[in-house]
Length: 194
Image 1 (spheres, helix red, strand yellow):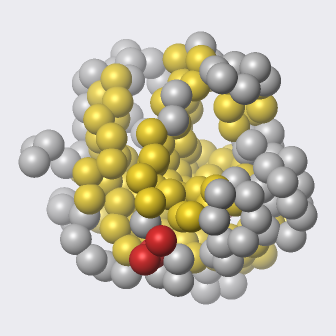
Image 2 (cartoon, rainbow, N blue to C red):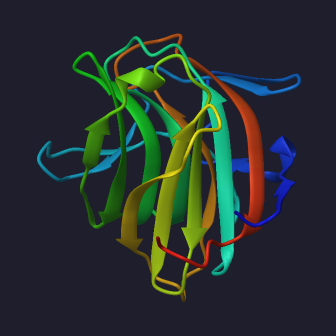
């Protein structure tokens, strides 16, 4: 992976203010109950209430977010959010649903889709999600506790549009979900897909 630089927590702007955010050696953020990001598909609703701390992400750059959380509530989620506007965005990371921790991504262009696979062995891990912005795509990778990177998604993404990205959390079904974000970094985008 290319050499990275740390992004300061105060370099970002929240899409929606969380219940609380406390900066120490990390950033501990508690979600508002009912927060989520989704548009239309299968469920019929639009939720634009996620908590995402965003800074600019241009073509040729990558961004990584590392975090830990107590995965207990249905649809507890954390990772990274990449946003052009209300109808064009992606969230990638982990989500606790139906008793399992899933690694995946939601790509939204008018309507949302969802790809997910179980990573229950990551429940107690520090998880890192990385996105690389190419001219026509966002490449998503993830790993647990510094282990090997896994390719999660290759998603079409408009390279001509201004976009921003950064740490994400949401708690659709409960109060008190707190994520400890341990690192936010940027680098040059990955040049290879494999």
